[in-house]
Length: 493
Image 1 (tube, rainbow, N blue to C red):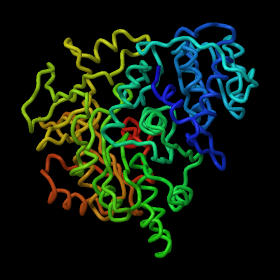
Image 2: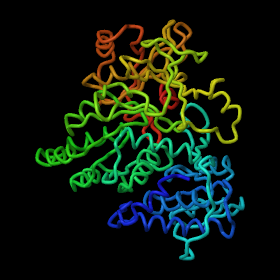
Image 3: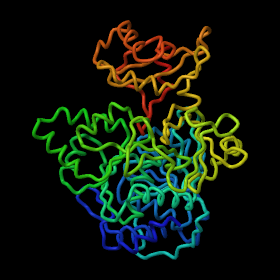
Image 4: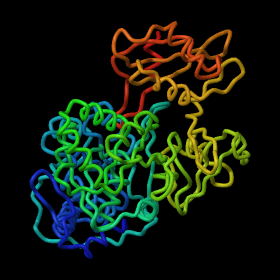
């Protein structure tokens, strides 16, 4: 069983969650989850790894349902509350969910489908008996959760995580990032993804700390909570940091100074889920006094690599392997490459998922013969720090006989004073194999392409310079802020 549920007994009277103006103790959360577990069991002694999907707003009710599913012996399948119905239908059908729990406002979207398919559907506010149910013993090796990959390069796959995997992922981060019971964190991340679920909510509750939820993101709301002076940890994706910087720059000098002073009192600020532009890291440090801790992880492995809590946090690098996680930078056959040479990141450890749901072939392809998980990300080790070059199929461009990192080009482009953000992709080309192009977010009309080309050639080798630029208002992204490069390519058609 996930250890946080057992640990809740140690922190019974401490505040676990804050939602709006309401605070909930660990005792209230534990009791609410046990009651709801009885409702899920519905007379059964054990859900026996039945998949329970839930579309619930972030907050007490979300965590209550998640813990209830685990305590009843089920598998938690969190649904994205902003996805259109076809995306939800895909997850429900792929997992074969037997029950769906939803916040009241999502019930109309799901009701007709669930009736048609014979899926049990009820509201998270459903009336419970008021008594704790008899709950099954859940071994650590049983399935705990199915989360879906971003689907940026192929159809989303269900990633099966056991309770043992979850405990390993969380305990590793608690050790590495010095979580403790007096921490207070603000959750601004969606809760259908490992970043929000594991790094924020699960780590906080495992530690006896307090998690505050922000249902609707805005720079004004985030800074208002910062100014209260009660938070100690903050985690977000680069896009959120970019938006917070933009909002901070609209404040009066006095208000901006107040926010900066408040941020300096935090002990830790983390960025992840997408590459952190060096320019954003440097600007945030100037504003907040914090060098953002950048780390590397994915749905299949939780977190695997991190810059140190104490010590140098190197811009443009994701750090070193976390405790208990083995990392290998390997060539195509899975053999290690010398330091300084690029290779695919392979991961091994208790944090690594067991399999893709109902995808035996994809699971076999994802692991080497000796049990290393192939991430598909290419990196290089520089003085002990790992630098991500990009994904094999998306960010590694093969042009004119060279292997080129799209992320490296993007970092250079972002240092140009006329470029706010960018995405570099490859288009098929008869002469070069692949042609490098870049979509730019700029103040219109944007830099002159000829001037930008000359500037880029002064910054890097000519074979890495984009052959075409396209100005756009914004880049297509998923809910975690990752740029959807397949959609970027379509912009050029």
